[in-house]
Image (cartoon, rainbow, N blue to C red; front, side, top):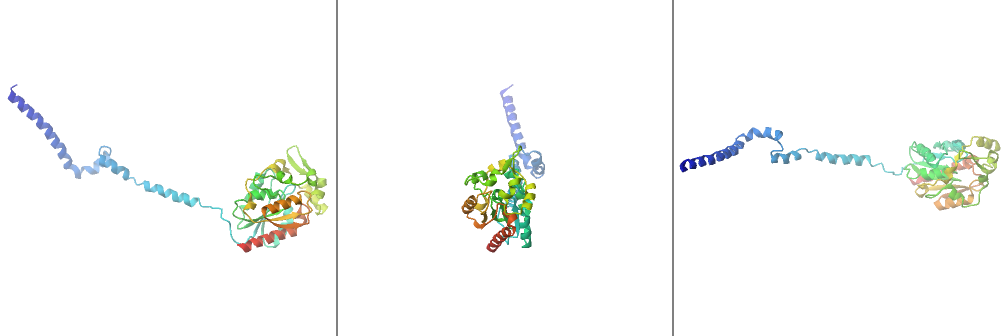
Length: 315
């Protein structure tokens, strides 16, 4: 091929790419009005400009902040104390009796206009008795006096803590442990009491009070015909319960009253005085046997009534 023809061919080759390039640049300029509606949906990855706008379009991101308000609204059940007059009383019995040991007290308090509930403790463990008490507390509408007799004092010490409807505590010849303290720990603070020698442990690990000693060591100022019935209907307590310790202490946060039974043969009056002083309770001495809720039902009801009225005045 002659040099002239070679030069013509080279010129033609250079013209074709230039024309193609001109065609490519001109093509987008013509379809922009028709193409955009189709291209953004069909080929998002190819057009970089569309890729950046696509993530911004899903504005579900603002939906995430809407979730926290729901959590915040569900979270605020704070344990704020209730206000108003104290018209509810929950009674918690101890070992070797059941809820009927409060019958005389219940009748007197009802006459005074109180809404009264008597817990039936299973006496199988501290946790079980606390659960039974909390179930009854949950049914109270308004401020409540929580009252414990004997072993029931351990129960109300645990159950009354962080309970917003418990306005105050009344201990009747009751065990009032401090944090990580048990009934056994407190009973060791004085010489053994006569009732201790009358307790019998059965093969299943439950403790019973000897029926023949029930009157003398547990309820000396209760008529014997009644103590025979009480001894027959007594509820035994798991021996392990007396060694269980409390993990919360209600009397550290609630106003407390303590009835010291000065003729007690089951819990030493000396230990009762120690517990009452330690908790800063208002003390009411009573010349009674251990079973004061039966032998002095009217006087016990009066103590609870005075405590409730005092708390009501403070509201």
